[in-house]
Image (cartoon, rainbow, N blue to C red; front, side, top):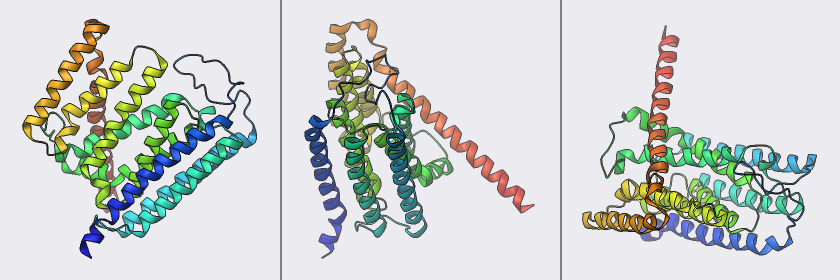
Length: 331
């Protein structure tokens, strides 16, 4: 009986992955019914191609209205879960069921909304807002996981416990925003980039839904979610044909080699072998594209690691403000 209970959260995770893949397949299949022939031509890196040339009241109302309903309901589940649950278990709690149901319902509604009104939030906000929101999400994970796996080859940065605890306490709200916002930013198009993006969003929504379960903190699952951005970013860059795929691949894989793999309790020789494969791969690729582009190896890791320290500083500032406010009220 206990063994069955221990499998509850993992069974839900496995089925969630299967359903996410099936839903992504449905997006691909239904893409043939979408008409993008009237869209405006691409206008550069800051331009988002998949939006209507002439939006209407209803295209905006449905996209923003459903997004807000999804966002607020997900936040409400997180709030009540934090208020009423204190520890992680292998059982799927009622708040996890609520989150799973909410995300499933709004996924179906997004599918319907795309095929009737098409437009997502991209009509009204910058493409960079979506991308930056996900990058900050990954940075917060690096910061939170520093206490368990370290930040640089297993070495921990001595951030105070109060900073990590603050980020852990509120990270769910931010990540829920980043994921739901990005989810509604895009219409459910059937390009390879969109399909990979949506399966990633489904996985992240699933992760957020498994709140206060052991599956939510399973290191293999969470590391896979972190690593998936390397796959997605590389594929999208290859599709765009801008010669930047190696920056995304080696940049995000470099973070895996330097940081993320050290949370998996791999043998030391395995970690060094992964590093060796990474170096050999980089030498082979950059001997072809030119060693003058070696800066690409550090561009993404440098940005992410710098933002980790910025996030830690921001958390420290919040703690100082909270302490001063508490002292003021005590007076």
